[in-house]
Amino acid sequence: MRVAVIGSGLGGLLSASILSEKGFEVDVFEKLPFIGGRFTNIEYKGFQLSTGALHMIPHGSRGPLARLLKSVGANVEIVDSKPEGEALYNGERIEIRKKTFPLRSRLKFVKLCLKSKFREVRMSEFEKGLDDFSKRFLKAFLGWSLSITTKEASFSRILPMFNQVVKLGGPGIPVGGCKSVINALSEVLLSNGGKIHKARVKGIKPGKTFSVAAREVKKYDIVISNVGHVETAKLLNNQYVQNLEPSCGIKYSIALKEPFINHTGVLFTLETRRISGMNEVTNADPNLGRGHLLMAHQPVITSNVRYEIAQGLKDIRDILKGYDYEVLAVQCYSDGWPVNRVKAGQDIGFETPYRNLYVVGDGAKGDAIEVEGIALGVENMLKKLEVSI
Image 1 (cartoon, one colour):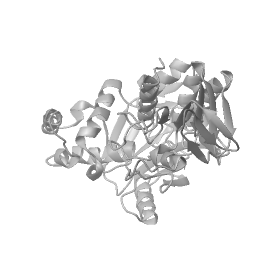
Image 2 (cartoon, helix red, strand yellow; image 1 turned 180 degrees about the vertical axis):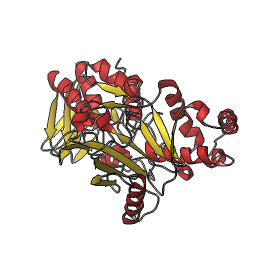
Image 3 (tube, one colour; image 1 turned 60 degrees about the vertical axis):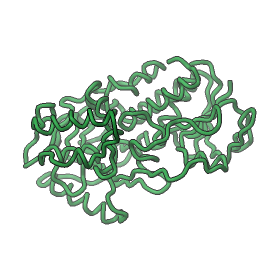
Image 4 (tube, rainbow, N blue to C red; image 1 turned 45 degrees about the horizontal axis):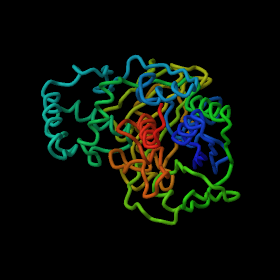
């Protein structure tokens, strides 16, 4: 069967490589001059900066993404983080463990877990009555991992993601950064006879087969879109989906002469204006920079992006006071290319109104954090196609 994959981001290439391995004839279409979308590297001033996502896989070598990479023979080394995370609070670093949180807050969490089985529970209900540390950590965790605030989050929808953290543990860093994953997947695809076309898809016409218009019109049995439901609907000239809210964030890439975090885990920042967390990827792979590469992230709270960046830079000055550093890049994702095409917990799944036309990527994730959710979304789509993994 012939498959068209629109977009060479992580979800697109993950789908394409697996299907090519299973004997499908796969064409990938990419409008940009490079593959990987927001999950690859660009070199700048001797550092490997990511185009979008952080150089981090939420559950390291134990998660859904690592499992799918192994299943398809994509050779990627992932350095699991030790410790998995710390919190910067009251001038001290506190390792994140279950017992880090007061018993009262842990009991409230268990109580709401039970309630959520019978009714929708909002995060605001969970937030009420939490101790200061737990409340601040919750805010930082959501901002770092999902680019959302507690006001935007549903406890019931976020709970499955938390359960994945408990089951699978914390993050890992791919050696070579995001690009190592993209390169490994493209190698699998090409070795199986798949093709990557540098061409923009202009439209999709459904029928007994799909007509996909790029440089020319070609027929395909299956179409997999990595550009989200909204853009896919535009290609179909059928607005089958409306009112999907994207999540927006700002990422800072910072060069340091001396290490700041000194480990491979996440440092959650609990007393900041905007910055939610940081990781220092060169502690896992020194080849990602000629010095130390620190990456910080914040959600966008207001519609004034310049103001949001100014707040984030103030946080960085406070956090790195006394350190010799340079902000290499400030990357903001909004409008047509946000952090996530749909906010966490609000996506509508991988299916469309058309049989054999599916959406993968950050617009159709499973119940896991960021790229792990992308992997689960791909896995769900493959199950629908009855493709064993």
